[in-house]
Amino acid sequence: MALEYQAINLGQGFPDFNPDPALLNLVSDAMAQGLNQYPAMAGVTPLREIISQKIFTLYQHQYDADTEITITSGATQAIMASVLACVGTGDEVIVLEPCYDCYVPAITLAGATPIRVAMLAPTLTKRVYSVDWTLVTAAITKKTKLIIVNFPHNPTGAVITDADLDELENIVNQHDLLILSDEVYEHIIFDGGTHKSLATRPDLAAKTFVISSFGKTTHTTGWKVGYCCAPKQMTTELRKVHQFMVFTVPSPFQHALATYTTDPNTYLNLSDFYQEKRDYLSLGLQTTRFKVLPSPGTFFLLADYSEISNQSEADFAIWLTQTHGVTVIPVSAFYQSSDAPTSNHRLVRFCFAKQGATLDLAIERLAKV
Ligand code: PMP
Image 1 (tube, rainbow, N blue to C red):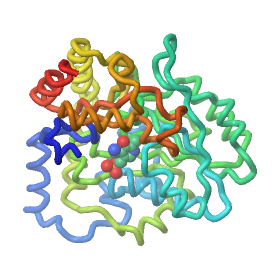
Image 2: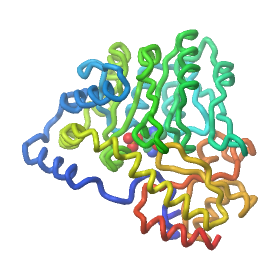
Image 3: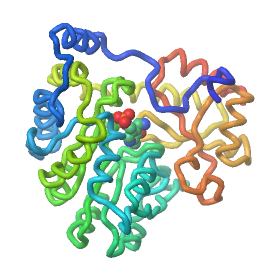
């Protein structure tokens, strides 16, 4: 619809700017050096090694580069392969709603049943979505094989706390189940916070597929390079699926990302870079009738449009595209029943991974709403 109505697209989560030219040159260099044939099935060694080092430095967990790290075609394929590797017919998998759209199809393709647990919607006093772990615990049955979590969280921007990690630790210690932790926004955390990977807790690391993506970290969503870290036994199962889904991932991109990632500034500076954009859009939205909610992480923020309209989130997003030429995503799209009142809180998601000029144009249009 954004294309059809020539709307400013703050909907889909992708940067409208190019990655660092140095990274682009590294890809050309790799191609010129002849790194153009099938790389190893699990990914090229230098990339797996630098990921292992990075995780050890940031999260103090040592993943073995040979047996515990797999380079995947984006986080999406890592998620599909992990789910197919560990769940099957008759199993149940818990997801937290609102949830990113590739989890449930992976679960149903595996023949398992998704069990949706609603996150607590923002209130006047607690203005960010959060998890009620008593609801999660109550949803666990003998059939539960996997719980999928995603922090920093798309679409809400919520980040994981020590208390959340404690709850997850209690769960894995009391129940025989695995966790999939989608951490693709691990390097986009604001206001001085730091990401608390599930890899930081040994009891969790022992049971978790930790998944991330270079797409978010290096502004290269179109390259589709991600990775999955998991204990050896889990990785062995994951690779059985990975081998026949894609076998491996394009070699020049892997080599380029391996060299690029040796400089920690390439990921450590990302939070500051995006915080500036978050603040720029938030400030701009203060000139409109949208009310911005806090966004502690990701490159998304939620805004409340209840002063503007009573429409459902989906209808509002369509109307905004058609009438005002700005596209946003209704948060209700991340729920099973997008029309249900429980999925509609008059909130829409804005992506601020955009150039200043794009944000300016959007703010100008939104001020007229
Ligand atoms: N998980 C989440 C939470 C995402 O937001 C995205 C991208 N929108 C992905 C996974 C997919 O990442 P990739 O493009 O690396 O497959």
